[in-house]
Image 1 (spheres, rainbow, N blue to C red):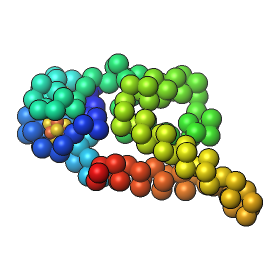
Image 2: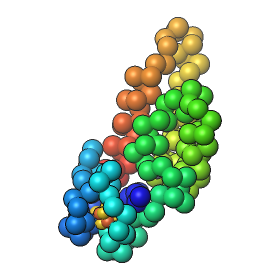
Image 3: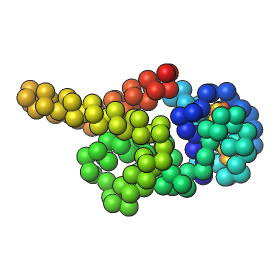
Length: 139
Ligand code: SF4
Ligand code: SF4
Ligand SMILES: [Zn+2]
């Protein structure tokens, strides 16, 4: 399996070379879907080297990791998955920026939320991750 990193300039070359249509534009970001056969043609064609095999990133792609970040933060994730997320965050600069900013933001607002007895809910976590991704993609 391959995944697309933060270096992506959205040139569309990978989408054109993929014979099985496994690359799609989702939330304004190029993403490799489950139909990927692992041929590696997109990685060879990408002019900025943004496509890499996910094995070295802990076997998870960015989409999967970002979907789990809220539960990972709350410690509500089984340990084998938690290890994979940790490995991915060590290797993937894109997810690491989102994770670090997410953590800092939640830690910053937590005392104010506690003082005013507002629960920082999963919904707030999800919205925050969504906006961090959006800002990063547009920057
Ligand atoms: S070829 Fe590389 S830079 Fe171009 S859209 Fe695909 S991943 Fe992004
Ligand atoms: S590795 Fe091959 S099948 Fe998978 S997305 Fe890239 S070009 Fe498509
Ligand atoms: Zn990632």
